[in-house]
Amino acid sequence: MSAAPTGISPLFDFAFALPEHLLLGAGAASGLRGLPQRQDVENIVIFGMGTGKTAGHVMRAVGATTIPVPMLVESAYEIPACVGKGSLVFAVSGSGNTDEVNHAAAASAMRGARLAVITTGGWLADFAQDHGAPLVQIPPNIQPARVTFGVVIASLLTMIESVGFLPEARLWLDGAVAQLSRRREELRWEGNAAERLATLLVGRHVLCQGDTPIGAAAAERWKAQINQNARQAASASEQPNASHNEAVAWDCRNDLTLKRDAAVLLRHGFEDARVSQRMDRLAQYLSGKVPVHSVRGEGDTPFAVLMDLAMIGDCTSLHLAELNGVDPSSAQFISHTVKQGLAPPKR
Image (cartoon, rainbow, N blue to C red):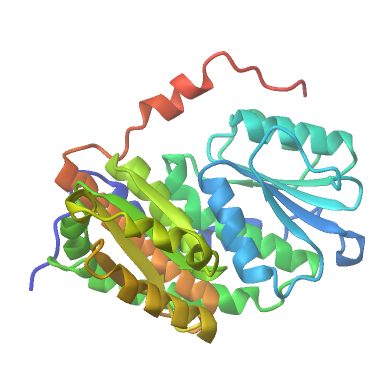
């Protein structure tokens, strides 16, 4: 075998740097001053769009069954009624100029919430400094925003640990780094699993599906990366809920579904046995209706498994970009058109 080519984009290098980005985020967030004490936190709220939202869902996926206070992930201008003096609010923006996040951060601060910020700079960094909020500044060379994924997740994990929740966070990070380093070596080879899968998905609408909470959070990342990197239609759903509705949508099968659609089931060893059984049955049910591909994440913790699935998805999307003949580093509509005419809140 020979090593796979770098590809048309340096985003392959960023995909392979996920273990280093986890370590970078953990280091940047360690020892920050200004975080509240555990006993003062009534709820945790993460504001983010795109990658920030997905990172929030990753945190909720791995932490919700352990952290004894509610954890919300929000991606809107409006903030929940529960946000107040007992709230620990994380504002996440790859650019620092994400309008929804900035307005939500400003509104949260007005209610007396304790704010922590993760960003490269922009309005949000200035706002954090004005208010004395803990600030993790992502190195500006880690761009576009979607490649900050690992830095953001490790920063969130480390700050939540510093507050007094998730004492096992460092072990989770170490385990994920070890698994990702192994996976990276596999994905560097020509004809690797991500490259092979991409050839089966090209030109199709891709349904990405996993179990709640681990596989579903990974599916959200897969969907977004296929959308943005490959400029290809994709959607995400979660089990067991999908077994109660979505599964029968494929009964309306025809030659077009066989040619234009595909399902990718994201599997792992930490699935609830009942949900695992449903996903097995779904794969059997869809046989002959739509192509079904299973991808299995590995690792010694749910967090490591989730990160492993994310790396495979990132590489699959980049191989799809090559097959589609598009530059995955460019997203002009999102970076310019969507943000036209918006004004930041007053600092």
